[in-house]
Length: 206
Image (cartoon, rainbow, N blue to C red; front, side):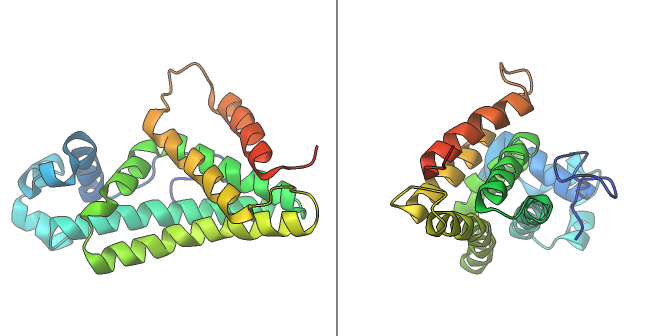
């Protein structure tokens, strides 16, 4: 399993540059600053140091840039989540903590990418949106399965496992809208605090 933006053999907790191509990096910067509708192909090409025809050699449209960027975001998130589960202990509680921590760290360290992917789902063409949502659902279902297993084992007490799971994921995703590196909480402190909230939401046993 390969995780984009990590060094070979490093942990899913560690983040370096994501390794986006210069074209996708330029599209990300433009989408963050101006939104998908406000960003022009000419501007993205200029940011990438390319002519418009040169950009079209890599991506045939602005829609293709959005799809390439959002797919890269979701693939990395899924890779990191799978790696977190693989390293976690065997119990639902341990795997729950691992997925939540992975989600939180991703939405801190890849907050611009995650924010664009979440905000610009509305800008995707129907087939592209369907494919993106399928990846997003895969991430959600990973946690749904863990929470249901924890309830069945008597480790989680929530009477609404699917709702609790979705509430927790929504909380983690929202981190990308407000987290700042110079904020009052360090990444580790935020993870510790939000893990406590997540465990409480699913009714985890002490």
